[in-house]
Length: 87
Image (tube, rainbow, N blue to C red; front, top):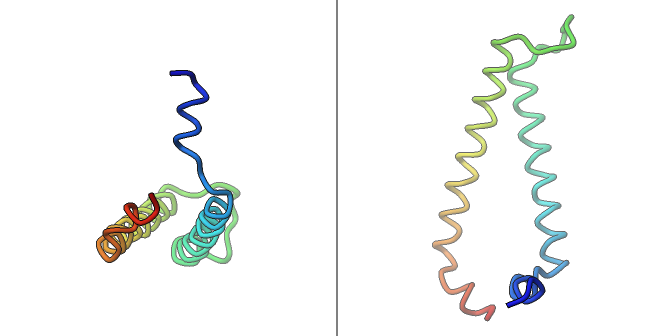
């Protein structure tokens, strides 16, 4: 089996890839804005985050990521035969 055979089996539709990239950009924007609003004061004097701000941002992003994972798992259960229909 050559290296090109493995790539042909894992073909990704460019339209689906573009849609996934757009969804990631939207999700990243939402998380970034929400966590920045919650964790970083509007008037700041330092160019770097303080330890408390860093922890707040880490926790905020982790919460969004865990919720995204739960939603993804729930959505997977709603459409159990999607993979079989595509083949």
